[in-house]
Image (cartoon, rainbow, N blue to C red; front, top):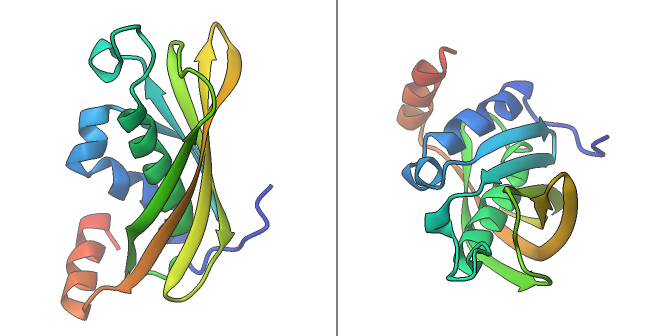
Length: 159
């Protein structure tokens, strides 16, 4: 259960839709599992083009997944009309990332008005067994959209 409360419940629901609308997210082909205030789970299915020569997921793919998971978790706490952008992320690879999918669990560490720090743990899932393969810290810059952008975002979301 999340220890955070969203500034606006609509934002929590919109995070997955906004992120999955990004070209990079569509290219990677991942999907969202759990989305709650301050927490997300993103699933990256195995695809040969995302691996190294030995069949393990490539480190850059793991880094992208960690960035999306941490940033998405941070995004669930933003007020309506705000977005976030990555300032920095650091990934530590702990074990080979292999299996039929990767699961990234992002969570907020410290929210703030301007900067939010999040973390993400990445697990390789092979025949239902999870192996912790990476951990990351992700720093996000929170940005209020100009009013015109808020209106166009609201019309896309049906608000």
